[in-house]
Length: 302
Image (cartoon, rainbow, N blue to C red; front, side, top):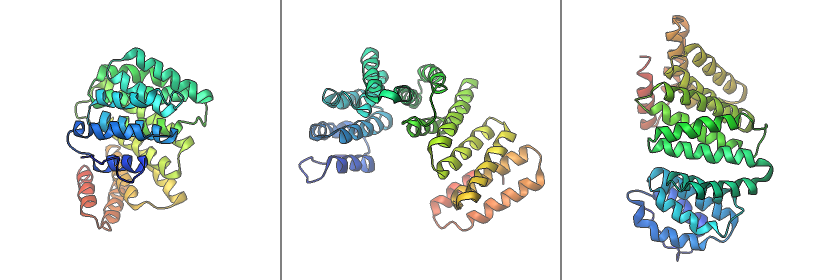
């Protein structure tokens, strides 16, 4: 559990890194240390980082959005023009039903972002949708998510917050993939989140981001039984690696998705080839945890 004393000779950034690495259990036990740490924040960069870490650890992971809102609020008046502080404040307010305060914080974040105001709005609302998803508040998640996707379609290429939008939609899609009781509404959200993450990474990410965005699409489309689309995404992911560099772990798992799609499409020879490639790559893995993870995924095509 995070309990570092701010009297220790460490920077705010160090303490936040410690919180990310070592938090566990009831985060309320470390609330006093976090309030003390907030008082030590002395610049905009640390303030934004503090707000982001608190939203993630205290809000998303621990589910204590009331505490998260109070902690971020202790910085809000000092950092009215910080996109990070105001944006995370907006999310915390929405998750605690402080709707007016959330709108006010969102408006301040958008004003601070100037020409990137729309992309900041999209990031904030998708972050709120993801947080509602974590609480299994599906009506709130879907309402915010659906409307925000319409806004996202109006984003110009190269907006400043493309990577943040790509990351949060990746997380949305990944979490929906793990949800066992998906309905048609969940499936629609899964596909749309994966597609938006893919679009954002294509224009703002490295080749590794782009390759993994294709892998996410392959996962999503196999889950949705759109197997030809899954095949195409997996083949694009492999082509990206062939053009830039090899990622053996990624390649092994992508070949599992490719094999799964090919089997559903009754392309038996190609299915066997993809399955064999996955096995051959995984045979080189040394880490026991990685081997176990691979076997859990490989079981679908064994």
